[in-house]
Image (cartoon, rainbow, N blue to C red; front, side, top):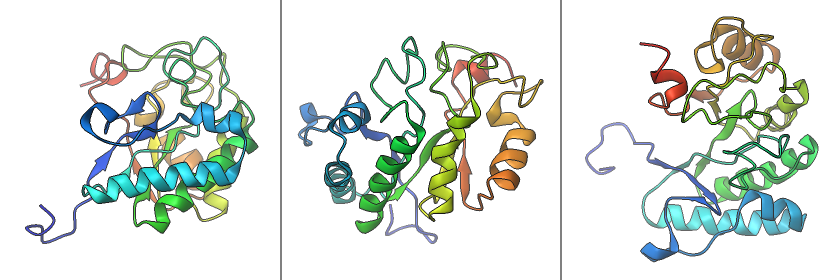
Length: 212
């Protein structure tokens, strides 16, 4: 495909580690561990080593964009899609930022672009945006922006994925993915992000069941 493309292709996959892991051992790929496990180990060097192994696997089969790391906070023990799948490094935004930075550095070293997700934060949610609209108005906190801010400030953020969460405090009409107040007002203008913004899956029920 790359050989036939006039413009080089971005070929992406969700390879976070742990349960969110498309290139699985059953298919002959190496084992990987979750963000939560790496956060508990607590060593930046180990996060770099694991992320480097992941990036090497991706590069070996032609993927050059990993839809990771997850920089959502472990902010709700009942969250089914972040906490439930061990996808957060920590409840501490500064810890999340440090591990995410190592994840990005390791990928960059091997020529794989990383994508921080899910802006402006999915960790405090009580529901799963795959299944329907999720309202985080009562649970979201501004500290969920900190990992995104740190990555942007340190030049370690090429791409950010939006979340389909609804937060009436930020936008009383639309979920983050469809919100100019969130995407332009907060991410572009307030945080100064100039890189690529991509949405989460637009066929997830939070979008497809509510909007055309």
